[in-house]
Image (cartoon, rainbow, N blue to C red):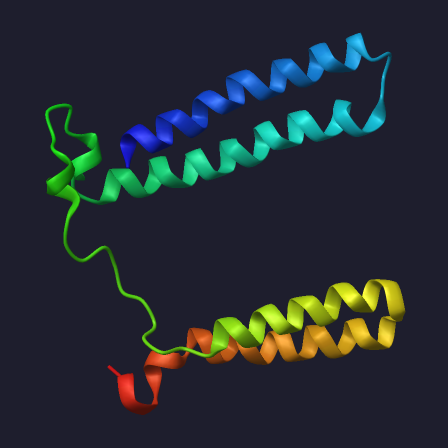
Amino acid sequence: MKITARFCLTGVLFFVPLGVIYGFWSQGEPVGMLGIPLLGGLVGMIGGYLWLVSRRVDEGPEDNPHGEIADGAGEQGQFSPWSWWPLVLAGSAAVSFAGLAVGWWLFGVGVAVGVIGLVGWVFEFSRGKHAH
């Protein structure tokens, strides 16, 4: 995880100066001049999160310079088995984006269904067959 954090934080050093250079090169084109440094900020937030998490967890197989591919085999985390909630969230996102083109009432319906789907996915392991 540490190598991934370093990789993402290096992106900040690339995208932010690149956005400034692009702004001068394009005579102030607003989309790229703002979007490229914001991409650097996004990569920085991801890298910062990974760096904070890597301080709390043990060294992973990807951090070992002499590691083998087989070192990363096995369980990679806890995932929702047979979960339908991601499908509900994807449908609500589609309805919400369609609502931006059709009308705000449809956007509201998509957001409401999305909140229900998000709550259902978060609390999926708190009830039912897979409750802990």
